[in-house]
Image (cartoon, rainbow, N blue to C red; front, side, top):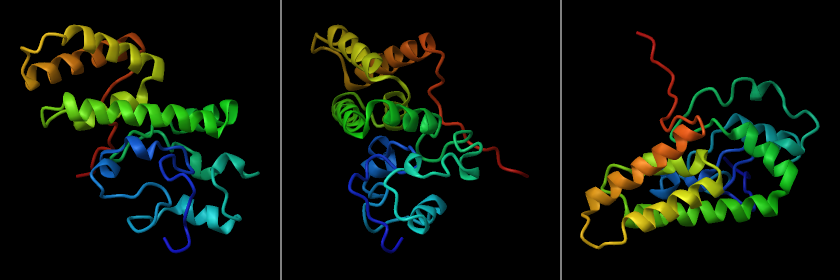
Length: 185
């Protein structure tokens, strides 16, 4: 979208963690307000019309009607934590949130480089996005312990990592699947 540029494109103005999205990781999207790419977003247009707020929660009208059921369905990235993540930013500040998100992005990149058998990218993106950072770190510690021996194949390591993330998600009552709208027939 013309003139829609943001200082930190890895956390969208509406609360998506763009840096944890498979579309961003595959260079199909520059992140929110990161330049060229698919940016025909009604919330971006709204931001431009209201003075270019960096994050929606800074607007006097937040949360507006655009946020009704915004986290009900997912796209390429999970939307389930959008509102919670914006509230977290309001509570801890954007700088602290960006530090957490950067750490999650680094962990995700490590997982993809070392534990992705070609079938786990979306799963790891969802897991790192939905789980709290301390839970992600806990799983990473378990992965390191359980894969210490070098005799595991990549597929075995990927399966083990996925199992450990799934186990943590169950403990936290989190479903690690995208919540897609069902198509009308």
